[in-house]
Length: 601
Figure 1 (cartoon, rainbow, N blue to C red):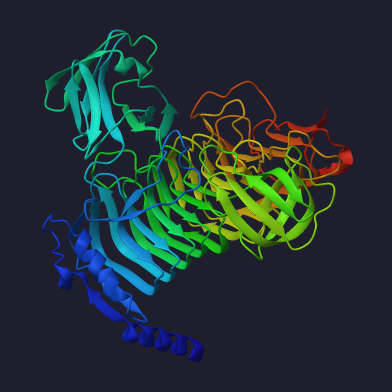
Figure 2: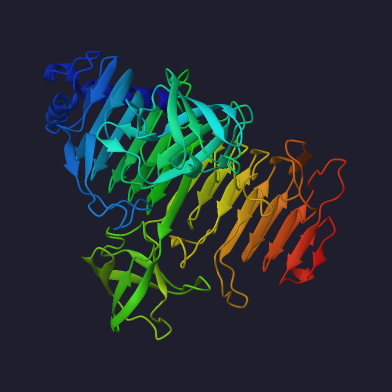
């Protein structure tokens, strides 16, 4: 009790010492619909002189336009190639660079952004809290229309009021504030089922559009191959990721609390080389009552090359064209061995490049790209970005002769521990959670509801997405997995442990120590768990319930194990259904202990 009292007193004293900076002192007027950008910039500048400050927004609406916004130049992981977006320039609403001990207090306000903007950037900052606010766009990057009538030669659709459009020479064009959609990507949403399906805008591009009434358009053309039903919502965006929702860069001790991300351009809330991130009650979902079905054009939260502790608690994800949560590092490929201690490394994925993936004193792992076999460790002495896609790295000690051109390096220092709990994942076209980090991972007390693909994917690759690395301590417990994977049949395993080791090394296991326990799986089909090249996999005390959400496919293994060892499958409740098939590939009977029958190939 005494410790709690001391802690409360300390918190109180910190709040008392914090300087409250009212944004209204700088000409920012809530609910005025005027551009708050310049005034907020001045308020942020005033906070730079304080040891601790609260940037206070009285409750209301605040509008941000790009005209007076700070311009930045960031290369952001998993966003765009040189062809897609040649010049990486972004306009930012709230730009906090080199700042410490700042709380952005929204008091329940809504921040409305105009045009294409990053909502906030935290660069080189420490102890930053953003809380009690909602983020939205006057014109979201996603366009949405509800199918009212459909046949082989025409479609009648109601356009959402937030989706600005024009009919030009018989063609419908989606436009926003200083932008137009050019590179179409479409997803069909069935609101009554909460599922998202891949679709196409092509037949609409080739059709003739005419306005029937306010926000109602008829398209005449060939729709014989367009699959949709009245009541379903076609959502359309530009597939080029020129912006992100928010960006945390080289910052630490960041806390988001009670933050609603109701719409985001491009990739979602991205954290890159940042440390200790706590997201509590962050809601990536459309605004209640808005009638919209999509909140993010891509991921909800994306973590690239972070370290320390990432905690996601009491969060909700609903309405995304990609993964709600993705945590990974980046493999760089050896392009030249310059000397016994120096290497040239290249970024290989088209959307990830241009940032300093290594720094002096970082520990690295050397690995063979095709097998993902780590064969050596090292420490960086110097590192320099010598071109957009190339780094020159000098190591403290010579590397062995085993290292060859084409091998990969992973930054081991910048790998986080991750806790994801008490959260809900739904309304996504793809996976629920992607996780590849060698430090402790805990995923518990979450609901994964009808994710389009695997609810949880643990991958690691150095030849495709180049997203690293191995996992060594993962616990997945007390979660509900409800009817996931409808977009990835027949490989629709609810949990998929799938390292991309295309040339496996004998007796080398990419992943280790994964425990899946006390979960409930409600499945309409056979697949539950697939695992590859994993040592120490435990699947115990789980409950599996069969549903009739969709028609099951052909009978196939419920649990598929490939080149695994030290596997335990025990005390799982499959109800009255026929016992599942457990299939082993490239394994021996000694590699598994199971209380249900299995077959060995």
